[in-house]
Image (cartoon, rainbow, N blue to C red):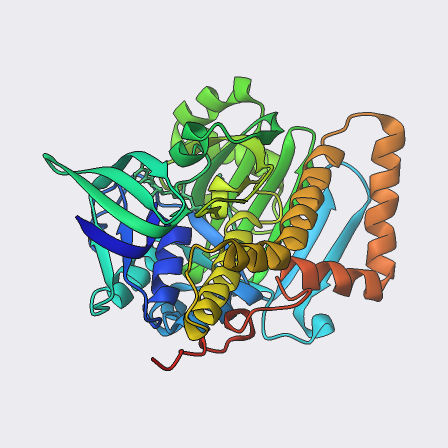
Length: 410
Ligand SMILES: Cc1cc2nc3c(=O)[nH]c(=O)nc-3n(C[C@H](O)[C@H](O)[C@H](O)COP(=O)(O)OP(=O)(O)OC[C@H]3O[C@@H](n4cnc5c(N)ncnc54)[C@H](O)[C@@H]3O)c2cc1C
């Protein structure tokens, strides 16, 4: 039976990033991912585009994968935030915040491929893909896992199990862990469009009565669109002809970017808040969407998950340096102490934004517009908000400061 120090279930963006971080540590690591390897030249069903924060770009720098991602990433130099049909708006400018960019709009595929490539030469990482975790049993010295790899059923063991298996985490469900949250009663329809008067580097977040509409700049004058709508509108938005969809989008967003055209295939995601009550358990830690699934307003979900990765990798590096068990209660408690505050604050902030800006009541509408105007007049408050969204707040792990992990001497 194969034995590992760390098994990561879920090789999505968060699990893949953790594997990338652990390739420098003296740990035997396995990644179990049910989707087949992503080929570089084939479109996949998930062509999502992610707004990476500056903090996340630094983490990818520390992991050594940023040079492979940078050529297809578009910097966000300013963000225009407005409330559709009302006077309130504010603009965040990168020079006010004293940073090179607030973040970078990046295709998920580019991050995936860069991580896959970085893992290939890593002799301490074994990727089992396509493979599925079927069941697991936790004991005091380790976790036994039953996995399906092709036609074969295998049993492996690990000292630490990391659940990075997404918002519908099977590990979380099997253990019956308590989850708080709610359904937003909204879907996000995503696509990309071409603008004939692009504003390079400028992102737009427009709050509307059905939820936020984000337009994020991409190379070549394209924009990534995240259009939050009522579930009753979703089927319509997905099935409209390209021309009718563009007309509908143009009516909602306006003409700031000139005429929009050439939408890519549309996809829809139902939006829910899911927060697991306890992110650590005996020999188990949940990270990324398995721990916290957020509303995409302000693009925080993956960025938060990547900060989990940076802190967990550092805690595991520290444990390795001291010769400690990676799954020990102390190691996991160190991780939790570090991450708890950021996880709950970010979840609260995005949840408040998502709810506040769809509230139809006049007093709330007036208050939020005054809030936006106040923000526009108060550079200090704007900068604090920007630092939080950039993932630069609080005590940052080495990777989030753009430094590589300190490799333990063994
Ligand atoms: C419309 C939309 C826009 C978004 N925009 C942004 C943004 O701009 N910025 C941002 O930071 N975030 C954004 N997010 C959030 C971001 O997409 C997620 O937070 C992030 O992708 C979560 O990554 P993950 O690896 O935790 O989970 P997932 O991407 O769900 O990966 C989980 C992986 O686990 C695998 N898996 C599951 N079960 C098993 C099993 N039993 N065995 C083996 N493998 C298994 C799955 O195949 C999958 O690959 C957005 C989300 C949405 C819906």
